[in-house]
Length: 438
Image (tube, rainbow, N blue to C red; front, side, top):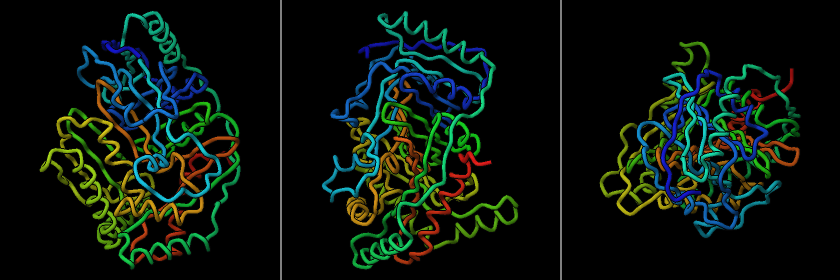
């Protein structure tokens, strides 16, 4: 990648739906898409990166290896590192017991650097071609602008082309119930306050992963959906949760902990919202994770700047209410994106508190090792900043299979059988959204 660049941005006359655009990039080298609230826009889409980070390289350090860019103002992203940080990177940050068996081990991280992309500005209802222009890439970037313009102005549509079989849970109810009971024993013993225990559902898969993503995102409309495809396979994330956002020196995290069904009937939905706000269990879970995130941010932020501007609000998401809080801080001088991510990874809302001990108990109690699930997906741009989601509600595709993690926070008064049913209840609308059954 170039050491120096300048922003090049041009509007394209097209209002093509972002999810249709994503499908047109699926056969390109290493395509990606971020659709929803990313970068305050509506979508970021790209392919053909300048560089791929090697598996033996440090993915946290790479987040700070970006060019110096001239002319970067406003909402533009231009390019940067896009990809995922898988959950198993926690082994590089802490001394933990070995992870459970991984039925289909994916790379622990996948980051690629792009010097150009498409950005959909939902407020202005227009597409932008943006690039981190350098003289040596001038010819290539001009050809990409021409190709992307053609794709955006092509109004043809094609049917979805993928097939998913029946999902099976890779853990018996008895085993999960036993794991939750043993987790409660750790809580009673004072080892932890809570831990997030997950199970895995898996099904046969064939066809185009980008079509699965487009269908699921259209149905669920999550805030932080993400798609990545490469030689290892593909992921389609429908996450509602922001893990980290850094703009300038300001850092923001929005932990979600506490969920209840949201009925389509407004009066019933309002009663459910009040029930969530009044739930002592859900409130306690959320408060514990807020404290954990305050502690994580406190490791890299200016003392006294970490605060909670809003706490315990019920936020509407497709089919559910979530209990949500905000934590913000100011990154201290000398601390960069690598320091920020190392201090906070993996997200506290999908581990537990205290985090390190909870992760150790997770490795002891879960039956299969996590992959991308409960890690983070997003980007770092030298112009815009950093933004990653919490990789929940995420389908991972490789080797003719697709799998989905589902979990919940275990606390002292958790009912083990109810925790198992909660996992299935969280997975059901996701599976329905991408199902190919008539």
